[in-house]
Length: 153
Image (cartoon, rainbow, N blue to C red; front, side):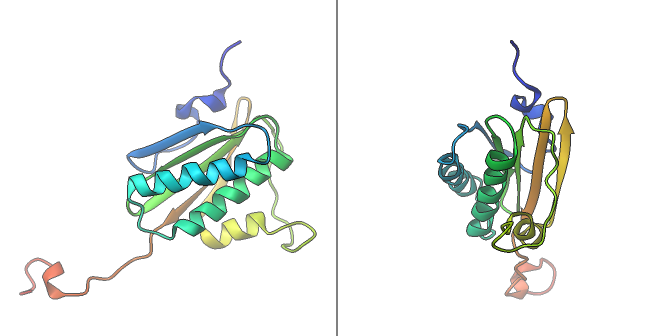
């Protein structure tokens, strides 16, 4: 039996940066903690300058959704660099996540993702789907004229 298309990183989506992490997670709720730990390390290694806690929250939400509403073990992929990061979580299910009214009854998952991310979506694959999102580091204006060549700084 061959690997599912979700196991092949070329099928996950576009690359956001030079750093890439890919990990097939166990089909159990403890995978949320594992995904956060792997992502924390990835963010440090790629030097991402944005809010790490935002990325970790998004990872928790996507992995939770894959475990609760998806099928099979989730595949986590994180790619990024200093200024942006892309998170993808794939599973073998075909049901597309649908935003619901946020609150205790349905959770805050996709609402949180829409608030924290610059973009998100779902890509259908031969065997399943990939839910992806992208986050960017906040813009930090230069603090001195020396930061701009040719301005006399």
